Length: 209
Image (cartoon, rainbow, N blue to C red; front, side):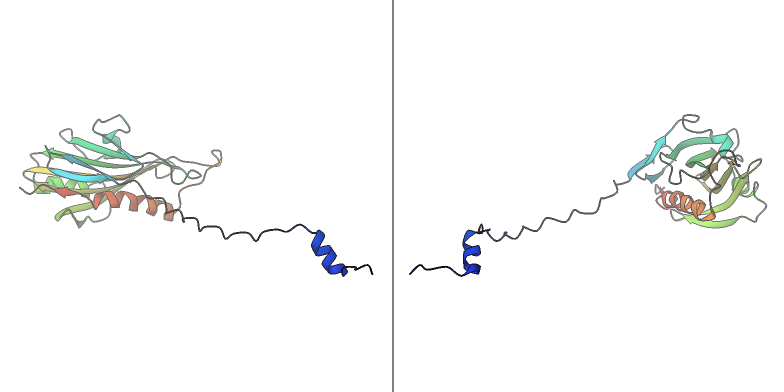
C-alpha cells in the first residue's frame, strides 16, 4: 500500500527552513552633542577676566569687527577699548539682527561721578546699580537709530584703582522695511540675544588688589 503524507506535512517538508533571527545587540545610544567649552580671556593690564562662549570671537583691535565709538557713544577720547567679543553666527536669520558685541574698556584717571555719567547720560531713564564680579556698577541704556532702533547698548561702569571700568552689551539691527524680505526682531528675540550677552557679563572677575 502506498503511503501518502497528509497535505499539511507535505507542504511543510517542501518549504525551506528558516532559522529564527538572533536578537540584535543593543546599539549604544548616542550621547547628546556637547557645547564646546568657553575659553577664558584675561587682561593683566586692566586686571579683569571673562569667559568667551563657543560661537563667539574675540579681538583686541578696534575697527576689526566693529567700531567702538559708534556702538558705545558716551565714551571719551581717553577711553581704551581692551577687548570686544562678537557673535559669529546669526541666531535669527529671518530677522533684521545684524550683530551682538560685548565690549570691555577703561578710562584712566576718572572720578566716580564722571564714570557714572558715562552710563547714565545717554538714557532718558534713571540709571540703576548692578553687581558685576562682586563690584557695584552704574547700569544704564542707550538706544539710537533713524527709521528704526538700529542699536541698543546696555552700559555698566564703575571706578577701580582710579580708572573707570566699562562693559557695553550691544545689539545691532538694520531697518528692514517691506523690500528686504526680513522682519523686525521680536521682543523675545532681542531678549534672547541680551541673555547671551548677560551670560558673558556674569563671568567677569577682577584681580584682587
